[in-house]
Amino acid sequence: MRSDGSALNLRRWWRSAGFAWAGIQHSYRLQANFRIEVWAGALAVALALLLRAPLAPILLCCGLVLSLELMNTALEAVVDLASPELHPLAKIAKDAAAAAVLVASIAAALVGVVVLGPALWRLIAGP
Ligand SMILES: Nc1ncnc2c1ncn2[C@@H]1O[C@H](COP(=O)(O)OP(=O)(O)OP(=O)(O)O)[C@@H](O)[C@H]1O
Image (cartoon, rainbow, N blue to C red):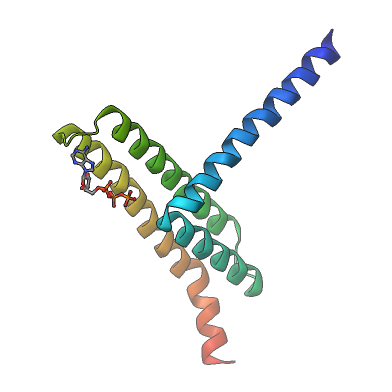
């Protein structure tokens, strides 16, 4: 009984992961901002590895910005579905979601400067 249950849960989890992956693919295909954030994050991770800088804050920032961008995409879709016509509340919802991404992106850029900046400077300025 127990093994049946966990096998079922694993299959369910795998199915849910497939839906989540479809969401990521959809956002990557349709949202230019998401593509930029993915590649900016990859660059920051590569730099952190190359410069032996702390990786955890960079990974956290990447996760935060990409997750918020995915939530922004989801909210835009729901707003467009619920309010195809212009509505002040639809504008508030979309603008606030976009602002959440902007705030996280600015914070991530600052973390990048603080974490990678000194090591990058040493590399550029030489020993
Ligand atoms: N149904 C709506 N009612 C009122 N304002 C809206 C509505 N849909 C979008 N807007 C507003 O119009 C502006 C442009 O929104 P739009 O979704 O077209 O572009 P965006 O926010 O840059 O998103 P995208 O990532 O899809 O380009 C934003 O200020 C948004 O809040």
